[in-house]
Length: 143
Image (cartoon, rainbow, N blue to C red; front, top):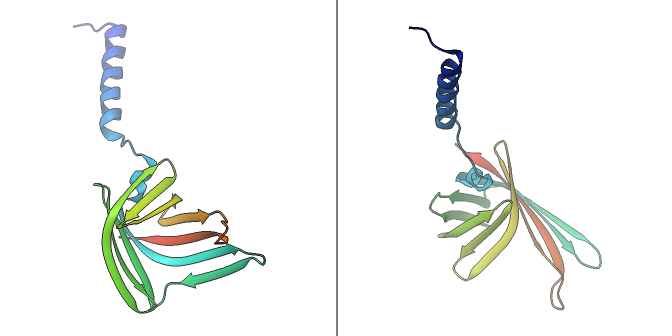
């Protein structure tokens, strides 16, 4: 049986297209958040008359773990200055913007995942009552 070149090319392209679609994983940027993250550091820049920078690193009194789930829920376990707190909330992301809602608190920020490091940036503009600030949180992926 002789195969025409057109039929041969059609078969090859068809098989290639099927293998590409089954092997390629479509990933949205927010899918990179899913999993466990351990707190590494927090840098807060307070935009007062004199800019103030506070850096906090992970230690025995400051430990935090975030668990982003595919369902949109988030669990957190925190020890802050020796005081333990844990709970759950919901999260959603669009492009690089992240919203986390825990009880009556809503946090808006941006995120970036590079290799095994998650960076969250939360900012607030100055108001009549409060100075503006930017907080940069770093987390490492827990395997």
